[in-house]
Amino acid sequence: TPVPGPTAPAFSMAARSAHTCAITAAGGVTCWGSNTDGQLGDGTSLDRIFPVSVTGLTSSMTTLTAGSSHTCGLTEAGAVKCWGKNLDGQIGDGGTTDRRSPVNVVGLTSGAVSVGAGSNHTCAVTATGGVRCWGNNSDGQLGDGGTTDRRAPVDVVGLAEGVISVAVGTNYSCAVTVTGGVQCWGINSDGQLGDGTTTDRRSPVQVSGISSGITLVVAGARHTCMLTDAGGVKCWGDNSDGQLGDGTILGRRAPVDVTGLTSGVTAITAGSSHTCAITTAGGVRCWGNNSDGQLGDSTIFDRRLTVDVTGLSSGVTSVAAGSNHTCALTAAGAAQCWGQNSLRQIGDGTTTDRRVPAEVVGYSTN
Image (cartoon, rainbow, N blue to C red):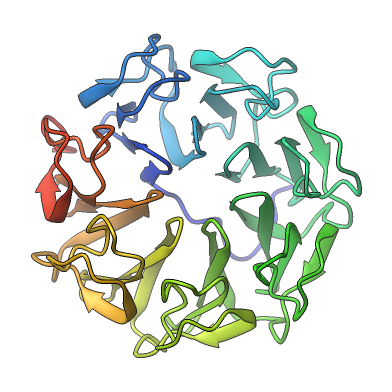
């Protein structure tokens, strides 16, 4: 039976290293940017400067997630589909052959409620609230107690039930439980697991001081953030570029409040070294690394405190941070992106970095 209580958030847009994907009005998926490993899902390995449709999807998609060079999503029936790079088994189809169009993940053809893709591994929450992971396991990020890569999903130790959503970073994973707690596992060199240590964990540990009240967790390269039920944001882990938003560049092994965002936030996303949030007014605020303009404030200055994204003060419904770029969907049905664009991940028809949002050409949900 499905897990009662809170439901997993749905992400209508996803971004990671150098590609971006979004769900269309009809429930299909369109992607743009780097396609070296087939991560755009159009059946080719050609980079795309404009959005292209993902091929072979026979049912509507409800949520998306992007890894470094692979992409996954959930269908309305809760089937997990993945495509792109598969060197470490991160597609979950039992092999290591790259896939240029979507394939089913072994054992997850219905009922899944959440999926998260990291650099080279993937995790999902099943209908019964258990967590299963697959792909690279060099730092214990699959949570099965070992460090052996897995080409098909394996159970995460101690999380057989009671989980509503997962978030996957670079070689680590986190989960939100039905009680509003957060557990993480994998690499912990920067304190990104939030347990107060820098000890890697091959199975889940509780985030320090957090036993309830969390609705969403997101994972960057080496930092992690969460959204409280009061609309506040807390972050921990690497802070070398100010991505924790506490006004310092001091790394944190346990959660700290993002200055100025203790309430009034509806969604968050984490890039490699930057973080963004949607406010209740529908505006976007970002902080952290800004070397490519990924904060959208018209500069390339890193920010230790939150800044407003230029031109997006209202009407934003979804936000997704890639490694060094960020994208948003608006209530008007448009997609806008900013930041690094060397591999066409902005989707504006150029390879010019953008310090303020630029409209994705040819994408509309209306």
